[in-house]
Length: 222
Ligand code: MD3
Ligand code: FE
Image (cartoon, rainbow, N blue to C red; front, side, top):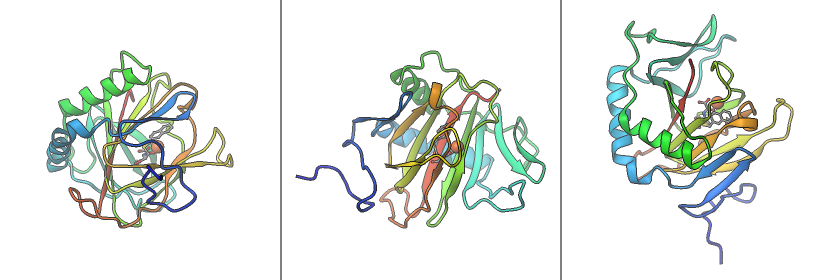
């Protein structure tokens, strides 16, 4: 019997059922459904953040507009413009500090990090991404954070996405793993600088969030 959801056809490993643990690499793991008990509080947190710092499409240094819309909360927020990528204390749109990190984000991130073998995680930044059908994130590394010793915790809500996980070089072959509403992924250690991305999002409307996917990544940036 096929027990796993097969939303993506033949070439994806849909992983374990809800509640499972799927290793993506030596020090990265998908915690299926780990965020489900906290979804109400997490969505209230996203609403509180975006009321103060709305989603916006940033420009890349190369002159493109990102298809993913983003915002931030916490002491530091990731921004991109013609001058480059960086973390900043002030939201360039409002001229104000980024909204505080909701308590539920912090609580979930610390619990997930500990569960994945990274106790004592003290995040200071959270990048919130919003995908609409067709939005994608091309292969990249996350290297604007000061200390690569800290893990990154990611929470997926809404429509599913196909996550691409490559190696330490852009040309390394990437594996594909679907991420579903409520999944939490923790990346650290030897996997921290691996290339990764998100394939164009299919329009499979989610009962709670409609035609969007929200992903937020909780980090130690400073
Ligand atoms: C693997 N976001 O915001 S989360 C990003 O679903 C980003 O929105 C994707 O890549 C998303 O930078 C993927 C997963 C993620 C985040 C950081 C990583 C995977 C990572 C850092 C190192 C290795
Ligand atoms: Fe990334």
